Length: 295
Length: 295
Image (spheres, rainbow over the protein chains, first blue to last red):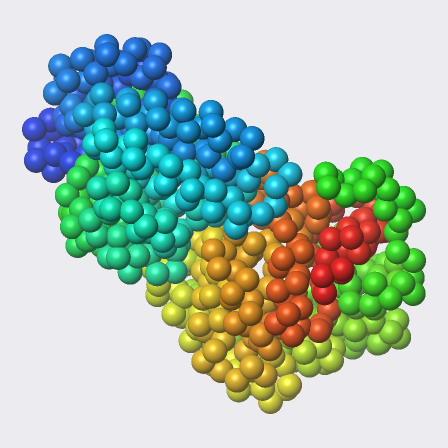
């Protein structure tokens, strides 16, 4: 398969890496990139493209069944690069339910043999304008989850979110802030997720990635595109279509010692409307050109 | 005039402060808030509402004429709180034209007797993914403008922009970054603009405001609203309609020693479609409840 619609700066034709290509060894399909695929479809699509790893979302996993999902993924020979996602514990009115849900997510992570549960802090509660307080509550909730996660061999991965989401999704806005929380704990207890979309603009992002070192528990890639799509939640682009320098970020993540999988996670209405196999082919091509050489 | 459509946390009825109310003494109409008003309309609207100050944009000023605009504003007895805006000097292909335009903007600032020219860095040039380089070029361009501005008694005000605009409008993303540049110069040469929309989420924003101290050359207010409007450039809200804590930010700006005007700057299609006088009345009410008490 040949890509003809390529972004600027890439050669006009890139061949899709075939299954077995060693460059694919660390590439993982985050399920949200092919959001219309069920878990079995995503597993089959990943295997067909020659991927060895998948980032699993809790909702489609629950729909299919936990034990059945585990067997499906195991039988396909895939690793689970991460479980998405826990967190959303900034609202005092719902903190007990949030902690219960997070404990269930930790159980699911352990059941699937994954090391990392991705945590998103959550936004400001309705009518609450105290972002400092919300950040503090997020850190407190993580502290309350650590013993439960540690007993089950699960590392909590704090994902800083781009400030575009500070009000309504995630009050932890920078890798620096995520590390300030994570460093209160042992690295096997709490790490950080580096997602290019969220951190590419951060003033000292390369220094923060170096600081993170062994705490990087997941590396997720997608691009920042302009003009920003109308729905900010679906504003992520395919690598190469936007403004992010994957070379420098990826090289920094590698230099920090990260040896895990690289998840492609794209929330985008156009990507979701496209054929799933074509989406996986496209991101595999982009990955081997823009990301993998710097790992 | 009584406001009935009030945001949560405000009393159901707020009286519009009348002209002469001392609480209005530092409130300034940034022209972009009433974008459909010409310069004479904006001047008349500000005077009618009892404001003493206006934030002038270069385009409507040029349309009306520089000398005529100066006379109009002087005759109305208004101060010019700032001139918006210079900058946009991250593209090497257009840097000479950008510097020439900025020198003209400095001349206009001096002509109007304003102290501050607001600078927006500019985004990434087309196809350029090196944000570190772009930030460096922005700082270099500021350095080249300083002697010209200093001779004319104009302070350059670096406005950090929310990271939502890092790719396409302004690569200086935090107050901390803006201060890192500004501190290379004398405070009369280069200061910073604190706009609540841009900095409210910044992890240590209160500490950075304190650090800024005498370098704060403009304080601009508007709110961060969700869901974010489809056009991110028009995503600003009226104070009180969103998630920003104006009390803490305003108190920090005051504690830092800022004694200048407070501009209301709202880019929003709904606000622009509304009657200009009603918009000014509304923001005056919100200002005296949410901002002015903390100055």
